[in-house]
Image (cartoon, rainbow, N blue to C red):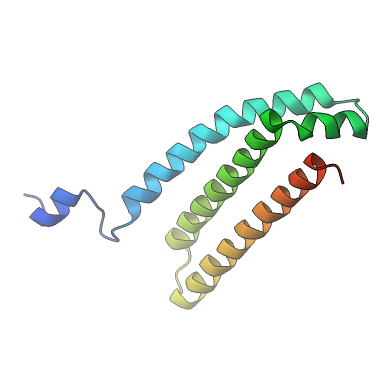
Length: 126
């Protein structure tokens, strides 16, 4: 005998109405991070020992800068979702939970914006 309501079974959502979405976005961003991560690591390994000008020329290419930007955004979102799940699962106090979730959002945005700024600055030749 199921304890779920017919509406709950139809929508396929968990008790908090967001668990399934977090689950799938965590998997999607993990896959995207894996694919883009190989490209990012391969590019960085190729640039080891290069001077700044060679790095800047490489990063100025849209074929390199765009995957780097996508990787940063995907990894930041993946980090945000993962930490939010950990906070929601293991922090008992509702007050601390709210504060930590908000700080997690701001931290994820800060990391993403810092990385995007650095990539764009190098790409556009600063």
